[in-house]
Length: 101
Image 1 (spheres, rainbow, N blue to C red):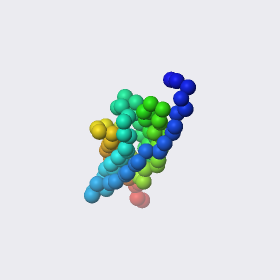
Image 2 (tube, rainbow, N blue to C red; image 1 turned 90 degrees about the vertical axis):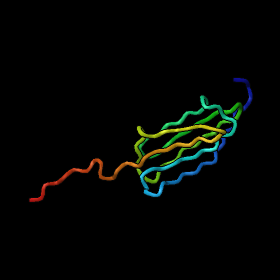
Image 3 (spheres, rainbow, N blue to C red; image 1 turned 60 degrees about the vertical axis):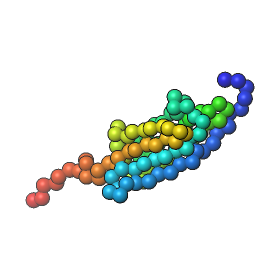
Image 4 (cartoon, rainbow, N blue to C red; image 1 turned 30 degrees about the horizontal axis):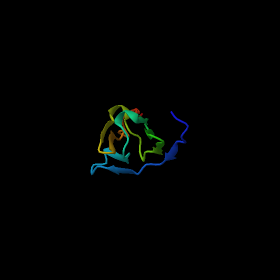
């Protein structure tokens, strides 16, 4: 990398849910970024993203409204738009049945 100063910017981000409230869609605008220059990490309650384009670095991190299943997330990057589909965790998935006496 040269001596140029890298400028960090927050990308345009939109998060929406499907009608059944079972999946979330995260859309992040990253114009001019190459797919291989995107670093996306997702855990159960948030995501973190960095994407570099020359002397510009897009940086974003945010909490999800509800826990998600990161292992089932899918991401597609096309024409400067990163689209991430992530299912919400079933709130009863880890529920324990309690015997009533």
